[in-house]
Image (tube, rainbow over all chains, first blue to last red):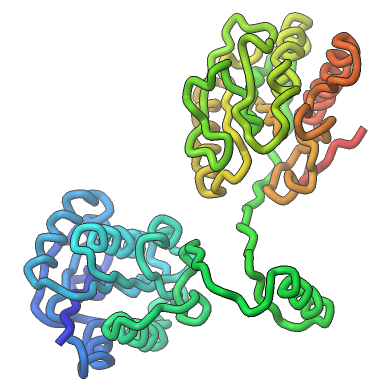
Length: 347
Length: 63
């Protein structure tokens, strides 16, 4: 018999609602709450041997402690598979399910499975760590979520190959799998185009990332007093690239002090970018970030000041998720430094 | 400020100013240093103007 340990929150564990969200981790033998239905779907081959219950607030506020206590509880049962949730669109519960799945996978090296609504923050944080089955946004979807979990569990129990996300109902993890296609790429592309022209359904082989738009910010009111900062994805760095920013698929950005620098020269600055011909930027990096012009505009009183740091990374092949995270970090620092507007240059 | 404005539109930039070329958005190696500086100055001036312009949606600030 395959042994499964199940994780649920204080609500599904029957402890109580929000007023019990501080409930500390507890383990019980057998199944509890939604585990009852789940167990009945797999009982010919597997059994939920234990259920961990933890309050959502406790887990999220004490994540390291909660994870280590829960791992200790789970280990005792020596399970073959770990399941958490379903969490639907409950944010803290989703994060808890994702985090505990990640910890179990890393420490106990067993398959992990959870389920939640695609917009649950737990998805973005942990989609690479666990199979996350897609559910509706509320517990009303339990009737559908449990059979989906049961079906997927059977695949894990029987060590079956897990197919593509759309076949199996899990949220895409961003993992590409090599396979031998019958037709070469060019004819597959034409097939897709023909389907599109006929208004037939088609599945792209390369979905584009989704970008979220933001409301345009108010215009700068008093530009002659404004502090302007430079940010670039053109990879301009001090000569020698001190932070070793990668020429593509950058894993970081740099922050560089230009106090007293009025002009970027071939001797002092260069580009780390590997996605365009660097000749012109290496000759004169002002061609990518206009430090010379902005310094003069300060002298002429056209703008208030130029922020003494610029931020730079190489924007080719950079993961959108990383770029988004860096953008948020950079924006936070710029605001804290009293910057009023940013000129972002892109190559 | 960028040359491939459709990318800027796709990623959600709001105030977009078209520039010269991918490897030298704010310069042109084929003209004299002085002319090149003037070109860069006018581009930055237009960027400064764009920053002071009220917009309701993504806007490309053409010449």
